[in-house]
Image (cartoon, rainbow, N blue to C red; front, side):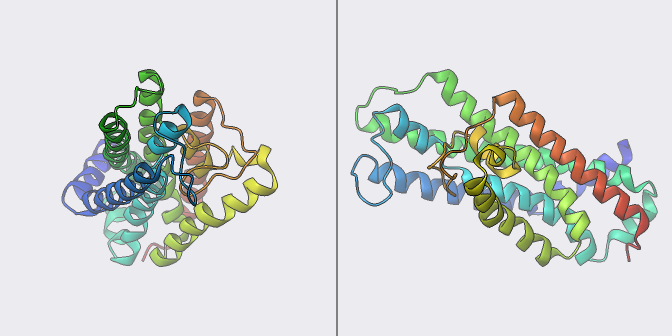
Length: 260
């Protein structure tokens, strides 16, 4: 397992995948955060409440919604890239126990996802607090709540990246896997959560986004109305269970399929 972990971390360190995905995540987070902060309290269009209010500051802090989706794609690309670049055969010849390889990939992707989450959370927090301070607003949320949203972004990004590894290993075709994950996050979860709000909070992207501060009827992408956030530990447990379930399915199928 140690050798597999070393190999996977080496792959991430020597490619631009984490840096590139993190850059995209931070850019999108900053764009959304700045647009929300500039229009906050204006009452126009989809403007959030004033940053002087708890609701407005919370909405602005929760701007890394797309960053969470990109974290999942980081895992997808790291796994499916082995098949696109035809390196899967060499990887599994070097480490014949395929379950260990997938576990190592998930751990490495989770670490990369956590770094992405840290960068996105820092961008969102800096923008929200910076705009609030520049306008002379008092801090409308406790520091512990702000820290919880930031940690929710980090943990959510790490677990979604690990889940992405399982999805990429199951689907294998990189473009197909990316389309599937994006469609799940932006379409399937939205439809399911809007139809069955009580079940929606158990969906992976929704659970992670609500850990990061998104609320029902808000967020970017939007969380459907009526969805109530899971308690923080429960959300982590749900995401971890999803990671394990997808990894188990990927391990079973990978062990039975030709990797060439």
